[in-house]
Length: 440
Image 1: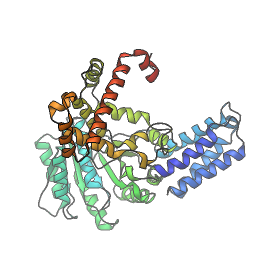
Image 2: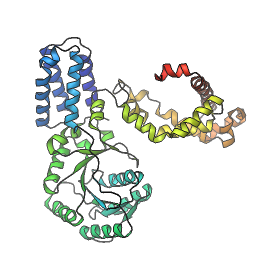
Image 3: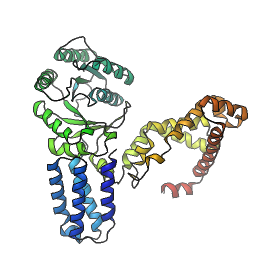
Image 4: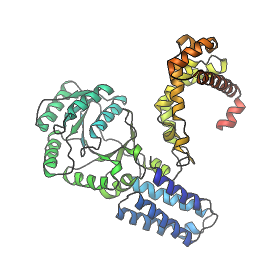
């Protein structure tokens, strides 16, 4: 995610950030590098000019050049300008209360990931306690209705569909069903085209007028760079957008779409697609994304991911098991599952300050966890709960069942025993915890 632009900006920040004194020439050189980095990231040219001019004007002022830490002051200016470029602050959905129906209209071109995003958004709102209905109004693309039905079933959200060629009729009928069955949120998946045309816009205007949505969100492919901003501007002029969802953000190494959208359209980015999984839709925080771009990491998002996966009571129970030496391979398997829910190891490392762009993807042992999980799943529950009974015969059986070798099974058990011993010492040694986590 944003690897290329982050690498460029991290180098710029590292060069100036630690300097005890900087000159106007230092500032001019750094800003020139920033300009090139933004252009390479496919950011809109007018946006780049405004960003560069404003940064240069502020950074060459007396407040920076004569400050105690001019390098750090310059980095702060770039960070603040970057946050402004991305949208200043988090913009949430503006929905009505649970006793009143809210309608979300999803728009976008074909291939932008609109239908998948509809299901992800429904899943997110469902987890927030809203009763959501998906309405299939993409009557143009073959199999779009079936795709939405399958995705709806996967996330546990009902889908309204009709064998009709009139999207306005389907949209109205979907709203009627939602009222009858007390759905408080309706997400309407509309038709797209390979490119913007009058017929598409005319159809979308009719659907918009029929459902009167609280939110009209464009799903834009972040991989298209500044073209996403131009598409958003065209949709906004015809339909009137309330925000944008950037799909495929996890595959975007440049960031041109995110950095161009707010300045070009004036519309906020509300969510980003971070994986193909149902939970792969996250709120967009401009300050956190700016931190990632500048190589400062995103610890807040990492902690939130952990909090969503690890229950506080479960964590306390785990600590007791570690202290009393009752932590088993069964518990170890559960922890592997929890870590997997947080996303890829690479995505988590990118959130840690100083590691963004510094970790060689080829050196991340992504297969190791898969092999460990396969070995653990090849064991019986009795074996996972008491690893001491796993003798040579059982190890041979486990190796065959997991498609690994006896040596790998032995390695996992040894690793588990070392981990258990280390964690036991850490849990019991409060002074060690204080040193490790900075606890008082």
